[in-house]
Figure 1: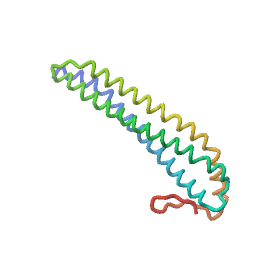
Figure 2: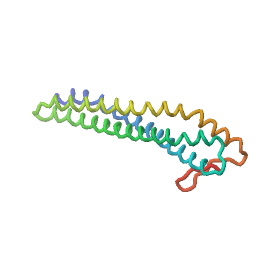
Figure 3: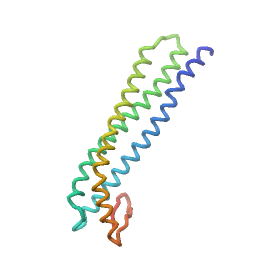
Figure 4: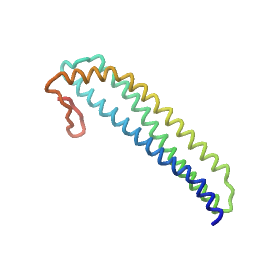
Length: 163
């Protein structure tokens, strides 16, 4: 039991970071949801006979598709990071409870955990840049929708449309 107390103290760090990765995953899935909603709104706007700012609208789906692809990859890597952290905690407990020395496994899990987290954050950052690239066209589109007195955003089934 005395050997287990330092292991518990060592395992607290990865457990806390798992909750941080969970909040990161929440942020990433929210961003993905916004990109999907925006793509639906653009699709509905492009379906109109003469949408305002058509060239700007036609450029956005490609940017949103690329951003969504990067966000999905970042979500996958962040999930792998959380799984690696959980596996690291389990390996720490096994090393304390069993007479087997596995420092190489603990080191490997820690390095894999950090690499997947760094890659997830690295893939998520381009989304922020492309979001700023879409910002001028998004504000132009919102301004033109706001100018129409009958314009409002409605949700029917699983599609967003601008009435």
